[in-house]
Every structure is written in C-alpha cells, then in structure tokens.
Length: 99
Image (tube, rainbow, N blue to C red; front, side, top):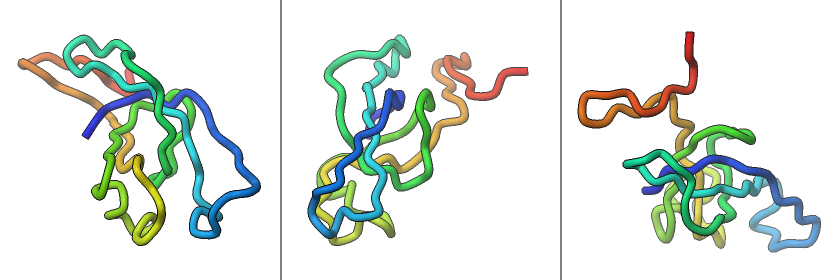
C-alpha cells in the first residue's frame, strides 16, 4: 500500500470495455516519514470517489482488483481509501480537516 496525493484526472474515450465507467486519477506518491511527495506519478482507478488534492491510499498488482468495481478488470493500481489523518510516533503528521 502507498499513500499519495491526487494531482489530476485522465480522460480516455477509447479504452477496453471493461474500463468503461471507471474514473482514472493521477496520483503522486508521498513519503510516509516526511509526508513529502516523491517518485514518479501513477494512474489509478478510483474505487472510493476521491478528488484532486486529496491524500489517498493506493494498492497495486492483484490487490488492485479486489474491490467491487475492479474485480475482473485490467487494473494494476487502485485507490482504495481517502485518508482523514495519519499519526506516527505519537504525532499527527497529516490531518484532512483542520479546525
């Protein structure tokens, strides 16, 4: 599993029929220790209704085909959660909603 930030969307009118109706999002991985963006971007199927700017959890490989909407689809990366907060070493390093 990998945390990342949604940076944008991909639109494709011509694609495998099994991908019709699935939202494709561009995700930039996040280093969990520094919470800085790092590495190359990925394209992932959105299984949870994520949007641009949100921090999400992604899975790859066969795990990406374990959601209701990706089962049996030609998918290698899926967004499976929208992150509300991350606590590490007794300290909150990320919070979606701040007062």
